[in-house]
Amino acid sequence: MTQYEVTETLDVKGQNCPMPVVKTKQATDQLDTGDVLEVLATDPGSMSDLGGWADTTDGVELVDQREGDDVYTHYVRKTE
Image (tube, rainbow, N blue to C red; front, side, top):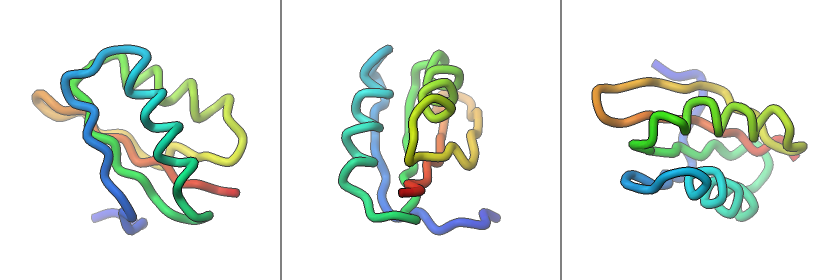
């Protein structure tokens, strides 16, 4: 169970660095404050890339990451 409600899902499966981060940034720019974006990626590097991006970007928070068999799922909240 999650403590947040997903507002929108972004599918970046099959895309490699830097596209998951670029597309995530574009998608979060369209969200309202408090909305949560679910990002589905197949690039293992997205685990560290999206974490690093969220840590250094004002207005977003990485609230969770999950590593599946073939898909990495990230949850990003827009904070401002």
